[in-house]
Length: 390
Ligand SMILES: [Zn+2]
Image (cartoon, rainbow, N blue to C red; front, side, top):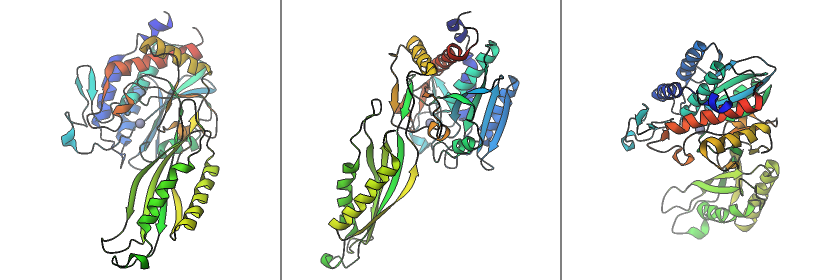
């Protein structure tokens, strides 16, 4: 059997069944309760003879690893077990916590982001095991808790040494079957502005923190470095929220702005932080408010070289199965790769079924054919790269 014939043996029914079951168990984050997902996957995977291990973050949030094969090095496949909240369920055409199958699609929270991706990876492992493909590697699935909020699960597993022997990492976040090899790093800061309150009838007596914040907003785009990444473009900033002022007739003495920077890999975070510090000084010189900031959340930006063999083979299989040109893409969002990879430089790829535009939306759905195609692309690339008999 050639590799194309082998990947055609993928168990589509298994992938569909696992996706449906995983979606039916609520793991909206917060609180991101996914212990039942880990337990379910452990029970399912034991049936194939795989080894499983659960790593609890706390009582409700559990990570899991599933592995088979022998070797000193690992091929690591990963997906997160939590989902974003469903929001107002009356906006959903189908019940969000039940994967409804219609016209070749599965509707429900987590179908695309990314319980369908988790099921895809178990499908890949089941195929490689059933077809008895020989590797010098262990194949390891890593299911993580809390990706949607703090990536605590992935950081926890990284600290436990899960990536110590990894030769590559493949994550099945939705890319519409394209091969993502770079991702931006969120860098969230809260910029505080302090002024002086006064009666609204005498604004000259006070110092208006809201006006001070408006000046800051004007300059925030100016500190974005001019460097560009060939797949990611430039660093961006979004002012996500602004809060300030108590009442219409009081001069606001406090205001803060939440800024969502998305850095590209070549931007040094310490240097960027210095630019922000310089901006605080410049603002204080221009306007009589006090300016300071705190970092709310920071995840590194990442990229990997397209000439790694596993990336080349993923591109080849994405072209073969999905007819995409064999060109990698960059992702504007961060994945667990940002927690799992550093400080190492392990080749990684993000490739999954489903459209990235459906992430975190009402009526989230995935085309079943795309989940199956993702499994074939990943399995084909793994066999071509690491299989002993090709
Ligand atoms: Zn996701």
